[in-house]
Length: 398
Ligand SMILES: [Zn+2]
Image 1: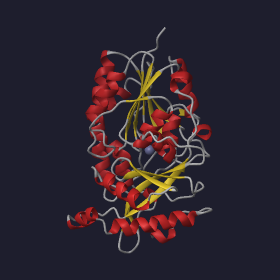
Image 2: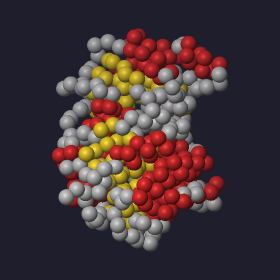
Image 3: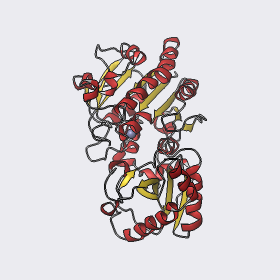
Image 4: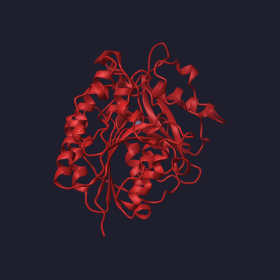
């Protein structure tokens, strides 16, 4: 017998802490979310442990767990997941680092991990020129989306690199990579600054009052290893709808089909409605569809509570709304919640259990917010429970 489809929706980093500007409410609580409220009345709020105690609060780790894979066993490192997405076949001994284009200010501080949310084709051009000038047998640059790219190398070990979004405002001098051979990477970063600082595209950005993308920041290194596919683990067809390379790479690494939505940018301007439509279209019996939205997390990293609230309201209107209307027409299982907290106060990920909504035919009378989740049934080792649910269908076992 076939099972109803399962839809996993992850508004990345949506969970937050109380904010003074919202009179002690979180952006999620302060936001108008009529569609989430409707879904909530049809499901169960739980408090989900989705990051193992030993693992970092990284989006790759947390989203892998939400797909039912134990990150301690399977996590590859962000760079390797993103390489997978870009179709770069890493070989034995190669490491892929995620490579941001960042903005270093005149005081030498890491002033912006995304160089002012560098978008469009600028990043592509800058990475092409970096490859031209710095690429060789040891190092290759590949462009990703916006300010994101990859640095693939067989000349380095896995180094300890600061995550740039955790270090906004810190002096670069204190943040250089650590580990054997890290000097080589530091030199490459310094050379990138020489090239990018003078780059005509960056001069144009300065003249337009925008932040220049004046240095590379490699981090999140990983080597590739094959993962068991969703098809084998759960006997389900998997699809992924996401804007960011990390999540598309994760989807591909577990054999999910990538559904392309032209306006899915991974940024604030992403085409949420287009993503919802693509996900709904993919819902068929014996399928697991994974819809990921980056925007709330970005607003958390930017420390912008008002923008986060707006992104949550847009998420509710343009993604949850159409999904709920479809659900009313034809039942499917739903798992919806953030992968981790990205509190405005911290501007980075925080590891604590997350509110999660399970719609499987059972109902509890809790609201679906951070506060409600604190009193909700606690689901330990969420990756195991989700894996069992994806595998067997039916009710989600707490
Ligand atoms: Zn995340």
